[in-house]
Length: 488
Length: 99
Image (tube, rainbow over all chains, first blue to last red; front, side, top):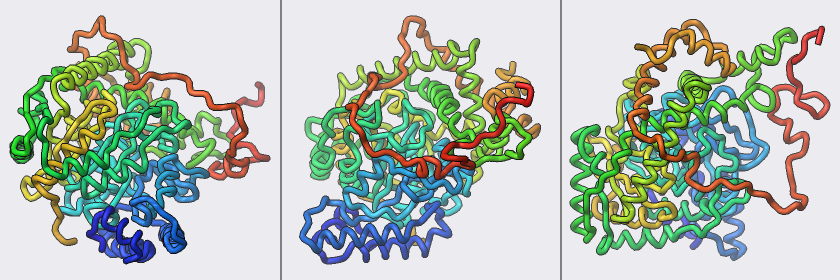
């Protein structure tokens, strides 16, 4: 049962061949059996999950017509506010916090009848590429427990690969959905920026943060995308436009016909910078697309090579401002309030005790990049580079329908191998970051193995062209199949 | 040449309200120097006449209809507060005795 897709589970539940409660219990049992080794979850909400499942079963028994994911279990990244359920963003500064409200996305998941099993582990405030920066200990990759599951959404990806949940929610600021998907052999999609609501998402870099769907198949990812996407009045950057037909596009792509689709290889991302095993799996997949009828051409996006440095100025700048709210006044930790210390001293002590090293590094970099004297050379210049990257994308999409690249330059690395050199960790995001700066959608789909570990194939599409990436990703899946880790 | 000194890191930490330790300063100064030298590569791009981009979508002020909607109760709003007093967030002293 736990190996079934979300689409299959939804059909079985709707036809009353199995109850939502049984499906929830099977997954809760799986979590109990393996999560001490995987550590995908920070909090398991057994009571809430069973209550939600019972409610779905009651509605189905009463003859109510529900959506395709009603009764299907889901894991939610711990960066989205869940009413009454602990929400930490992987940080000690929010330990024990129970939000008094639901994020819009969580409301939509509840309305669709999905059953939230719990909250998944992540790098603190979504800053990281390995989940090793979680204040609650790392998550372990189900393919090899000595390796990282990617980050920041390593918990959401590992939960899928370990069959603890068929669906999960991630957030993608620089690749935090796609890179964990790639290194765990699962699918992860970053929708068009503004296509999914940020209301109730604990902000890291507001101009980049994009919540999105994760699953083990492209169709499941699209079904979840359809549930969570769409305009939200409570998010001022939410796009007021119809959601592209991502489910229809995924099903079209699954037929394996890409006749008439033009695929662009990003020249700057198809040479150096990636492991040979990753590049060969990528090239074989491009070959497979050609056999499905796609026309493959090379395009140049010269500014993509400056995306990583631009991102590591823009994102820390926005984070240094966003994380100012954790001041020990309205929620979370407060340290040193002894009646003698001033407000400022209490704030500094609280933030020192509550934040981990990567968050502190980024706050300091952001404060530096925004300070007078450095602003023009750093933050201002990074914003101009962002314009040039957007122009590269616009020009490329005049020639091709989608752009493709490996998702990440290397397969899952060993725990501890990159933590002492933060910049080495940043390189994991080399191929995923340009899309974030542009604002378009991108998806990672498994395309093969290298050294026995999964390799991800990235498909990037124009703004609001989310359906295109699902079509091509589903075609990749139909050509290369899905990949399952060894039994845990 | 280093892009950032230990003293500068200490000053930025103070501005950021982070009471960092001496050991942290030792570690961060070197790490931040590596990072800043790497990200300074944005300066290689000729972009003098290029307009900056802050968001991929146009930013417009969004106002809702002026109608009453459900919102948090005072108890809910204060539910996560480290310290509350008479329906308010209690904070440490801001002014000294003389002020």
